[in-house]
Image (cartoon, rainbow, N blue to C red; front, side, top):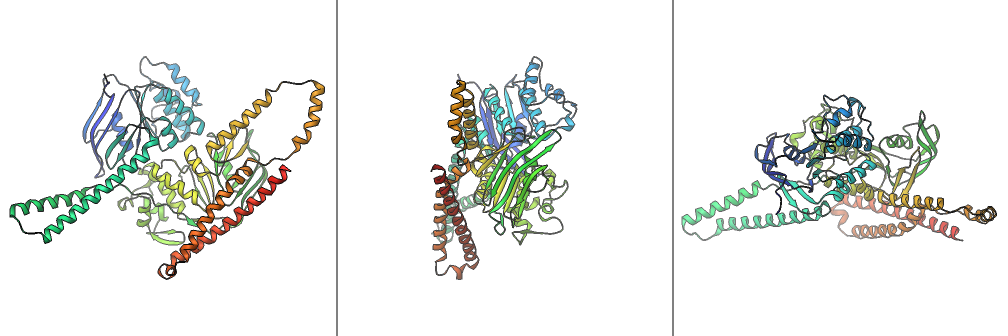
Length: 607
């Protein structure tokens, strides 16, 4: 016989700030079940999780927890008040009978000694301490709100494996697609105050969501057509019995009320970047770059060449020096040795990770305008701040809201709005995905993939890196950074192949002295033979497809501009199409030139 759910939320309603946040939301979790809770920023996901944890009381509805069920809740921002050390904080999560060894094990696995001062913790240390506290008792239900925030990739992959090994039921909120796909078995979509459930993992969510929204649009269209028919009858229909007319008029008013009160799906963020003139073909050239702090090497003998249009992702554990590396190669920090040469005509915009430029107490409007104005300069042109706010899904009544009371996702959208308003041809983005909802992440991926300039990106989001990066600069320890073509998955595959080659070479049995000597003489010329780099081979394989795609774009633009009335009816559109055509032709010529160079190089090596 099926067991009843450990936790049940039924018909939960909650009004926040005069606005209905939850309107009849349901949620249930069975033993061992792994559920991901998804929805737009501001849809009430964290609030619903707090109600599930018993930390917030709903206006109405039922919360039922099976007697004896243990629950642990990971907040987005843990509270260390009353705890002097990490150890005291972690052990406070244990109940009588729990094994203290597990708390010590988890702290060790998460690179914590337990003696850290809770008032001096970094964001990553605070997150790892909070994880150790909720994982240590192995509760019946784990409620996790953005558990991967501030974690590096090794810690995220460890956490995935640890959660898979637990028997606890999970209810999980995260912006990390790969994390959700690898863990979830069911999906609850919180949308416009209600919760829809699909008994499949997150990998199937977007197809399901689109089907639901399309069905809603069809139903809305049917409702609109029915109202039109009834209004037509009201104006022109044949007069019938008075009682019937009154009833039909009442039905029409009910239909109109239904249309008025129907909550429409929230729109998407309108992401577009300001375009500056193209930079020079060479953006950054670093030679033998080194930087140390005391005995610790951050960068050791780095050679890096960044060309216009490259999108390079930088990955490594927390503390490896990713932000320092960015400052070095963009010329903000002087190296101990080596040189950095920046290209010409660079217009750089940066998005910092810690959002320190958002001063507490500053209103949303002033954060976007700089203060004292209702205008935002976007790509050199003035726009009213209310219009720009709406492009990033802010409501007009939020204009005077202090930025420090906004959610993490809303603060992330402010940073994006400020960065994208400036004309640029080089973006430096430090953890841009933090706290953004999945729909905004999709749009940011599309923007960066089609961006005509150069992108330098620090991220721990594996799916985001795979979809955006043309190459990945990975930390390999002791100040060594190595560039791999492709995204995170490509990098892991190539790094694994390189380790396998090294292991295979180390497993070769020693040979006789005379044989070794003769083999060394015979192999000397082969060892001196030059080889194409991974990056060159990757470019040689992918450039023909890129050239073909650019050719299709050029043909489409030429056909569009050939329309006789295009310029007369839309002169601004014609000018934009002409600029896009020129840029595409330039990129195609450069790609063809690069392919010819690499093809000649390949023939030279093979001969």
